[in-house]
Length: 215
Image 1 (cartoon, one colour):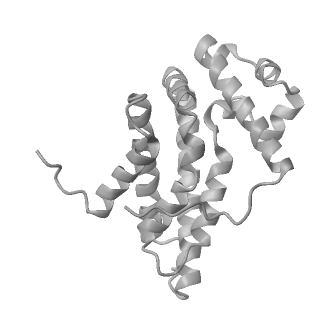
Image 2 (cartoon, one colour):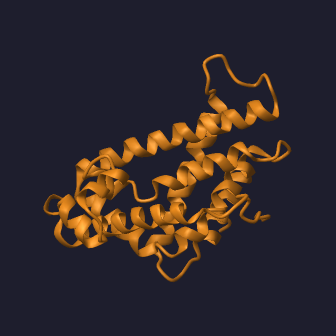
């Protein structure tokens, strides 16, 4: 299957890289502490101390204490949406979202342990599952809006009066589910799979219309 190279026009500047590093450090500290002590026993002060920043800095990156355990890679979504909006007009829609996600997978590969830990933390904390679901729905709607923008930009007049139509919503939902399945399978089989390969396999099956697997 064809995979495009990273299409971002320029590397992030030093300020942006520092912000991303701080956010990652906070998320990793939060998930790591929660996996060891339980979410209810982890304070903002403890997370901030482990990440080497002040509690005031914590709230520059996460709206609340609980968001640190859920929104591990929040900034990735906006980069994916921007890639979708900039996609060439002649690309099939499924390839547009797949290729936008492929540009981000290298950053995921080194974070398998963090994703696995986060999954365990969420399973132990039902209230976080609800928060995670809300974040997932918000990401899905934002991606659907980006697909709508791309469709309108490449074929003016396709935007429905209500805004986001069935097709963009379905494409976004399928994409989010495909990514979740790929990450969960990858985390469940550490050392056996490369995330990119697992992700490509999931999308290949989608592109084929989900035929019955060979015996």
